[in-house]
Amino acid sequence: MRYVVYGAGAVGGVIGARLHLAGLPTTLIARGEHLRRIREVGLVLDTADGRRPVPVPGTDTAADVTWSDDTVVLLCVKGHQTAGALADLAAHAPAATPIVCAQNGVANEAEVLRRFVAAYGLTVMLPSLHLEPGVVVEKCGPTPGILDLGRFPRGIDATAEAIAADLCAAGFESVARDDIMAWKYRKLLVNAVGDVAAVLGSGPEVDEIRTRVGAEGEAVLVAAGIDAVSGEQDDVRRGSTLQPRADIASFPGNSLRQSLTRGLESEIDYRAGEIVLLGRLHGVATPANALLQATVLALARGAAAPDPAGFLARLG
Image (tube, rainbow, N blue to C red):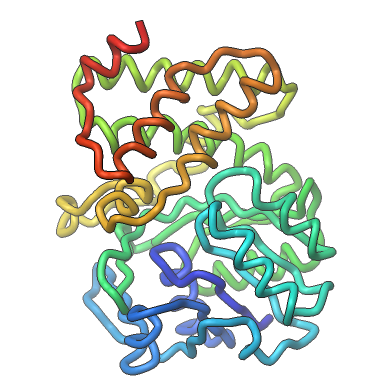
């Protein structure tokens, strides 16, 4: 396989660098100062073993890619950036190109299927950082991540199996799954609950808010008739695979926290906002998720971080 990694931030950068190091032809699509540094010195991959520049090719548009029958796109942009990425890809990539959504949320795969014949979901369990141009950081080692995937809306085919094999060759854990969206819906709830701590910190009030966010998520999945793997299944899959690096424990937490730290638009509308949407479609109240969504949007506009007790009081 040949790979185009569209979006070379924390997740896409780590995946792309490791695919290149595994000897698989890989092109990164990035932008701005990040792309300039990739072109000048390579993408710097920060691991438990130190930093190393990876001379992986980079560009800012799908127009520069030499497309072939064995090219696969790993779509690694945030959910709110999917439309722009797909417009670029649709203008230059063959319609039969497999597009793998290595993204949080559950809305991207259907958008891909509007434009391309073959859409795949990928559950991202890859703690990573991208806080400075030209550098991506693996937060875990020696295995950097778990990247299971499957055909959307469901199924396994030879392409999914081949991609999983290549990801394993690049140092990740990866298996092809028939029910990948059931895993992605569980990850949706994991992200929403994790975002509470990313925004509000820790403490008993935060624990209560996390419980409410998670309970609302479980309720909307039931009301919508959506199959999701259990939290226990998710815990078993993760196991002890993702061992955190002690030397970077002080870095910001999840991807939403990193977006806020860098002053970037977040994908909260596709995390807690997805739970809110499902609740409105199926008659389930989701006040905790709605307030979390509104709070993150306010933070992006420069508002002060709320007090957890005040947040909880607003929920009643």
